[in-house]
Amino acid sequence: MHIYKFLPVTLFAGTMGLGGLALVTGTLVDKFRLPVFGFELLRWLDALVLMVLVVNLLLRLKYDKAGLRQDYNHPVKLNFFAGLPISMFLLSALLSEFKLFCLSLYFGALLLITLFTLQVASLWFSRFLELKFLNPIWFIPIVGNVLAILTAQEHYGFLWYYFTVGCVFYILLLGMILFRLIFADPLPAALKPSLFIFLAPPSLCFVDYLKLTGEFDLPALMFLNLTIFFALLLITLWREFCHLPFTASWWAFTFPLATSCAAMLKAYEVTLQQPFLLAALCVYLLLVVMVVVTFYKTVLALRNGTLA
Image (cartoon, rainbow, N blue to C red; front, side, top):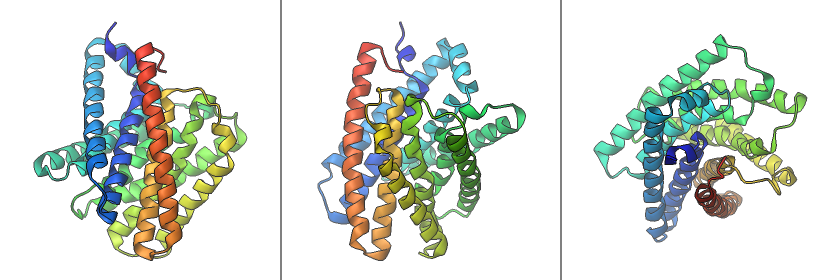
């Protein structure tokens, strides 16, 4: 049996989580002059895992076209394909000293996320989708658009396009997904980790807005407060996440924690208020624990052939 049958497309959430952890680790290393060993380990591990997943995707394209097409046509799994350009964005920021490679990776990711967002949006208009399929995983392509700003090495003028698309569709999807969570059937256990994705868009929009404008004004404060609200809401829902059976969707815990940590660090940078730093460090410790545990369980499940 070929290895590609053991690697679901949902594992791109894993490179998102590893890349996010590496990125905030690098920020902490820069700000507090910490040893760089952990950052170096994480960024090269992320590069290695992403390379394995890309090879796996190519193998599936050759040997398992029907299965790959089925995943791409699935209303939930489809969104995980956006994890590839997102992971490329993150890696381009992590390997910024390799200028040519970094730029190639960044603009390749930009092209992919642009085409993928248009493809996903066209599917919304062209086919009927049942309400039960709507869940926070649908935010992933939106995250890709706003991540293009955070990981850009230059202040390109076109970044406002991605900020606008990301923000508008985030607001629209937020209302739709909240409606589904309130009035439709509860999320199945395998999708409950996706609730953490509520943290990612507002935290990235906050950091992006500061990068684009340099102003900590009302819109920035609104994005920051929305991040804080969803963080507090998830804390009140802690019982929902206890005793969940392990699936690849556990990686959905990790990247949103990384983006919220980045937002708290940026808030501390612009306000110098200690509670933001304390919140960032607490989230970072939780992020490290979740990445280590999820990585271990993923490797174990891959070895046993039980990863779903």
